[in-house]
Image (cartoon, rainbow, N blue to C red):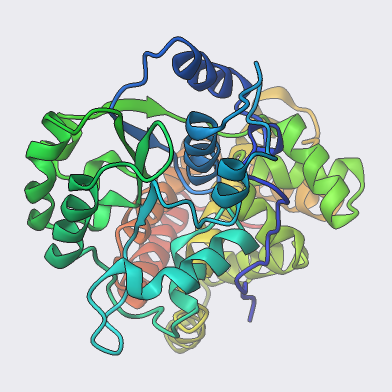
Length: 392
C-alpha cells in the first residue's frame, strides 16, 4: 500500500526574501511598505499549504528590524538579522498550535522544538510539526494561557529593535479564546506588528478576520517550482514539471511526492478504479479490504490520493476535449486515460470528477476516512453502472 512520510524539506537561509520560492510581486510589496513606513499593524497571510506563508512572515519580520536594509532584502549580517535567522530575536515572538503533552500550556515551552522544526524547513506543515511529538492523532490548539502570554509580551517595551513582531502560525487553532486578542489587534502599542499565517480563512474567527489586512498568497508558478525540484531532487525537466502541476504549485506536496515513486499513486488509483466497476461476482469483501488498508496510510496520504485522482481526471477531460496526448501524464497514464475515455462520455467523467472533488473537500475537513472512501466508491460504482461504462 502506498504512503508518504514527512519530508525533510530544507531551504537554506529562508529568512531572506531572495531564498523564498517565487512570490516576487508580494515580496516587493512588503519591502515597499517597510521602506515607506506604511506597515499595517495587523496582517493575515492567507497561504494554503506549500505556498510560502511562514517564510514570507519570517523574511518580513527580519527586514523590518534589519539595521542595514537593502532595496530588495535585509542584509543578513547585522546583529538583528543574525538573531532573526536563528529565531532568537527578543522582539520577534512566535505563537503556534501545539498538542496537549506533559501538561505544557505555553508556546515558550515548545520553543526549542519550534526553532528546530522551522530551521529544518521554513515551509513547515502541521503534520510534520505534530509528528515531532508523536501526536499526529491529537488535536492541537492555541489555548487561552498562550493568548494571555502574547498580551503580556506586547505590554513590554521593545528590547532593541524598531518593531515588536508577533508571528502567529495557523490562527485556525485559536478557539473563542482568540477574542482576548481583539483589543490589542485594534489598538496595539506603537510599532507593534501582528503577522498571522493561515491556510483557510473559513476556519479563522470572524472577529479576528475583520481586524486584519488580508493578503492572499498564490500558488508558486509551475515553471519556477519545477526548477527548484530539479535542483533539489535531481529530477529531469519533464518529471519536475509534472510534480509542480500535480501539486498545483504547492512546494510541500511536490517535495513529498518527489521523494516517492509517483507510479505508486497511479497504481493505487487503478486498484480503486477497478473496484468501482460492477462484475458478476460481488466485490463487497474486496472493496472493504481495500478501504481498511487505505484507512491506515494516514490523512495526508489519503488527501494526496484524492488530489491525484482529480489531477488524472482533469487530464483525461483535456485529452477528450483536444484529442491530444497529455504532456503531464506518463505513457501508461495516457493509455489508461484513453481507455477510460473510450468507455465513458464527457458527462460521466465530469460527474466522477465532481464526486471525487466533494470527497476531497470533506477529507480536508477531517471526515472519517473509511466512511468517506466507502461512500465515494459506492457512488462511483453506481455512476459507472448507470452509464454502462466499460473499461476496455
